[in-house]
Each structure stands twice: as structure tokens, then as C-alpha cells.
Length: 255
Image 1: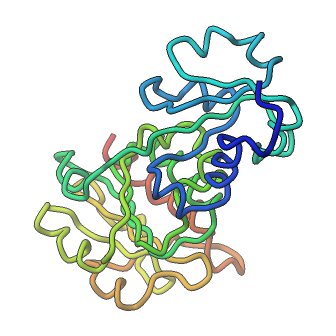
Image 2 (image 1 turned 135 degrees about the vertical axis):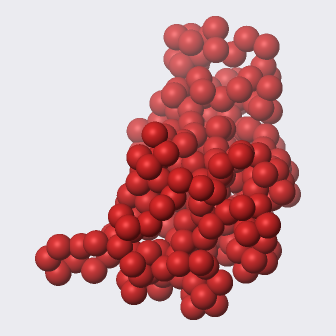
């Protein structure tokens, strides 16, 4: 049982928890909690860490994998939650390619994110994307790290099932969309009513930064500006909710 913060494994877990650069270097990320642990494909687990109490109650979950037991106090140190559940694991990052995401479905529905910064928003978008049948998520390089522990928790397991990729040049991706039969729609306040648009063919929704929205450069490359109609004095919804409305409108039209 690991009892000291000076243990090299614990030091590494702490680095993975707080440093995106380290996660990228090692090509892994952390998951925490019994639900995420149970949803993780066994072949993706590098190593698991658990308290003795958790292990004694769920020892069958650890069959065939490397694991270490840690004291309760050490687990609190490596945990990223207020009320730790007693299990955490290092997971291999998936490797998706842009070309695969653009061509993996005959009638794709994509979400393109430009400089999204809120971990909760990104995690919610990933989770909702699975529910709405989105075929892939493409993110600009300055979008928040998808492996941030808060993002991972918000996905509730969808991180394993929704294809995603970061790109160096989002503009180049938007330019490429017509070659794959994909129509692009920029979510903007000066757009046309979303309910008057047709999303039954290949579709890509462009969603911008929480505070500033899409840049003009990216917006102008889209085929059409769209907006969600509002009552009262509300001008817009946050990125996750707006994305949800758009995704489910596309799904409704395709049913």
C-alpha cells in the first residue's frame, strides 16, 4: 500500500492531474469515480489506484489490470473531487485523425469549437453529442484541454465513444468541409432562425468562445449564419446549451 506523497507514482498522478502538458507528453489522462471506472474499456487502463475500502467492496473490477492500493489520506491528495469515491485510474488517450472524422459517416453531423474555454461546457457538449448522434467534434488548438479532469467528469463516459480531434488550423478545416459534402452553419446573433434551416444532409455547427462568440474570420467561411430565437431580453444561451439545441434540431429532422 502506498502511504507517502513522496512515492514516484503519486508524484506522477499529481502532475497528470494538474498539467495538460504532462498529459499530452505521456498520452494519458485521469478518470475518477466508480461510474467512470466501470465505463472505461479495460484495454485503455494503464494503472488504477484505490483505497482499501473501495477495493474490498469492488475487487472484481480490478481483474486483469495493474493497480495499487493507497491510504485514504493519499487518495484525498490525488483526487480532484470534494468527496472522493476511492478509485482513480490512468487511461490511454484515444487517437483520432481528422480525415477519419470527416469521412466516417455517410451523413455526418459535426460540432466545430473555436476557442471554447469552460471545462464544464466542453464536457457537456461531448456528452450531449453522444445522445444527439453527433458523429465527431473538431476543436481549435486553443480550446480548453479535453483531458482536464473537470471535462472528463462532465462527459460521464461519453469521452470514450465520441470521436474528437484538435486541429492547428480550424479555418483550413472549414474550407475542406464542402469536399466531404458537409454544410457549415455559424452560430451567431445576426443569423437566421435555426428552425428555418435544413440539417438533413451533412452538417457542421460552428460554436465560438463563451464571451466573444465565433471570430469573423471563421464565421465568414461558413455557408450560413444561424441563431436560436429568443423571447424576453435574453440575447443568447451558453455554448453548451446552444450546441444542445442545434444538435437535437438536426436529430429531429433526421428521424
